[in-house]
Length: 111
Image (cartoon, helix red, strand yellow):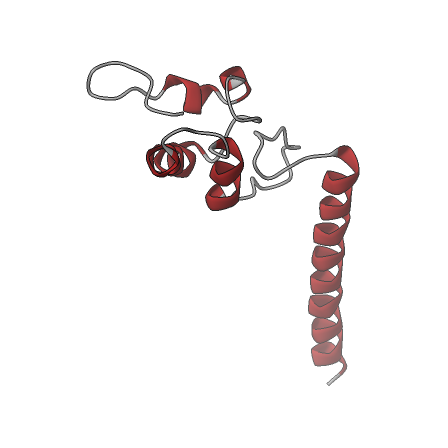
């Protein structure tokens, strides 16, 4: 009976520390200004967070003249690369995958 209690306590302790680690990492990201719409440099012991492409592309395409087309292609690029460059124009070096995607004609695919 004592062995079961020890195992249950160990499992509970591992779960609590895992949750605590997740909270601490989230707070660190907020303090350091890491946005989910930006490419992220993560420690090797942490997982890459999936970004919200809708929000990131909404910011990227906020001043686009053809907003629906911008949102469409930004969404395609975001889902492939899991990052969107900051700002509404340029800054593509912040996300090399996004920068390097090309359309069938060899021109940049991502807005």
